[in-house]
Length: 166
Image (cartoon, rainbow, N blue to C red; front, side, top):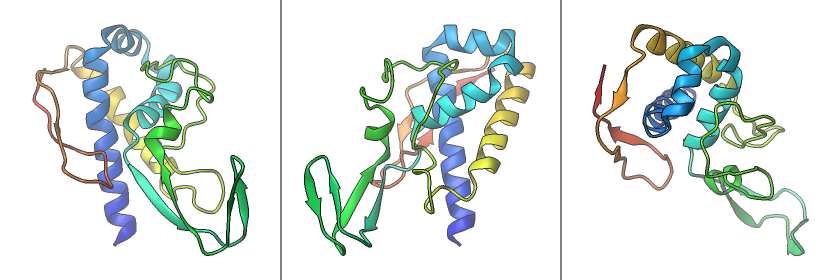
């Protein structure tokens, strides 16, 4: 069940956030309309970084660990806040700027490297890439026409409703 719902909710969320981000950043949208293939890979990762579809994830430490001079013990519970990591000024130049050409883009939208990296990351990237390739090639004037109605959830940074025009 987790595999089905995780891939559906998060990819859908990223796609919706992207439409709003492209509407509010028309220069970035124009780059994609003008030459989608040149920017497809970096745009897809920027969409996931910007959307940060999963808000947080809790983990239980298997071993003792020191994080920023804070001693943590095996068994301690920790929360990972993905949006915070994806907007970290120490990790990203201009983190509050939506930039479809951003490189490198070592975001945490799919979790951190290692055993907890998202199993569906490759499929999600492909779905987002194909969605925007087809959408922008057929409807280059597509735009959000309202602010997104945010999903009430502490776990998913979802959009419940977003009006648009073609």
